[in-house]
Image (cartoon, rainbow, N blue to C red; front, side, top):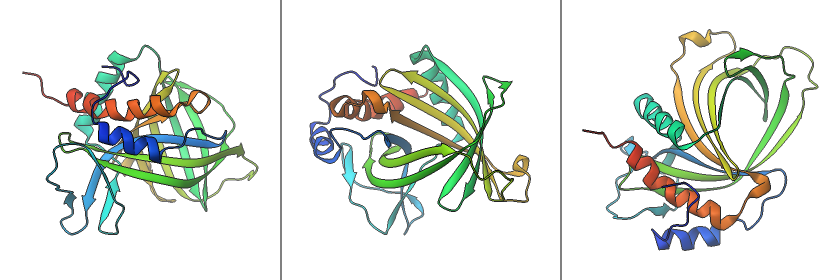
Length: 233
């Protein structure tokens, strides 16, 4: 199965996504799918709902979305993706979180040091939608944001929380899949002492975005993820 192939599975989900997602994206908009778990605040565990098929959850203060996967599943999924895609690139990115924006610096590409100018990224969340996937270990969050990338004109070393991201990007003409190990630290602490988290997201190519194709990518990702995590005998 490929992410982008046409699928009529989960017709109720296809219909809801067709109504909820934009037909077009502006040049500054991005749309992505993140893996994670819908968490219940009352139990501090993954939401338990007796349903047989993926369903969209209404946003409520009693739930939150934990946009991480376990380390073992991260590596299983990364191995699966490396077989699906011919093209990939790894980067070491250092993000400094500032007020309402972040400074982003690329330090390495495919293991080689690079000297690239830092940029300032301003991101505004516009819309999100959570999909509970009962037959899968992970749920999905679709997010739409406006992202503006500007030249870094701050011109000085600034203090802020830091995220060290080791990211591998698998590229398709219609979308990319980012698998990222993240180490976060506060201003004065050593990132080596922080516990890493693991993130996986699928982002549509803004220039080639097609709503129908993106809906199939969302729909197929449910089974692709589930099958990738099945333990082989």
